[in-house]
Length: 113
Length: 111
Image (cartoon, rainbow over all chains, first blue to last red; front, side, top):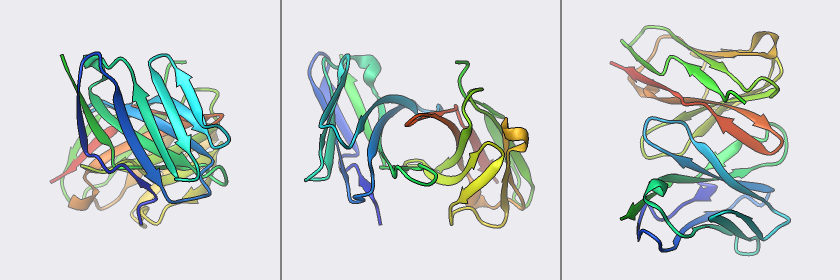
């Protein structure tokens, strides 16, 4: 039972355009969501997060949108840069107990110069 | 912040051998996590410490796996009698507020 789904394994975008990465979840107990960026052979790097009581959070070129009724969130990167090429993981935090993260399988973003 | 560090970064071992990994969290973080990541998957939760107490373990953590965090500082993850299916990236993270910060991981290959 996959509680966090990233249905697009890969995405290619031209440099300077917008990248939109999507994530769906099934666990209603998630109260915090995080996006991580991962380069090969490195650990995930925290990018941006959003609380379930908000519908948008922005940090520079990165914006995360949350639609609780649809159990859907998206990460927008604008403008996209070649250095953004990486695998992006969406994660939900149960907000209780161990506060463990449940990750999706990731989306590989390629930004083409 | 010096970040989360892990050692070794890579480990190749033969099936049946024991291996031990170390994680040093960010110094003021009292919550520490271990995750495992296999090819094509996201990280999967293994276990969690608050200070020196191991408070939760995943079903993924078989009896061959043991983790410790003496004195609530660094943590070790030991795998006994390794199997080829243990080959993965083992990630450690420490938490501040709602955010977990990951180390670079230890890549294990069991031959």
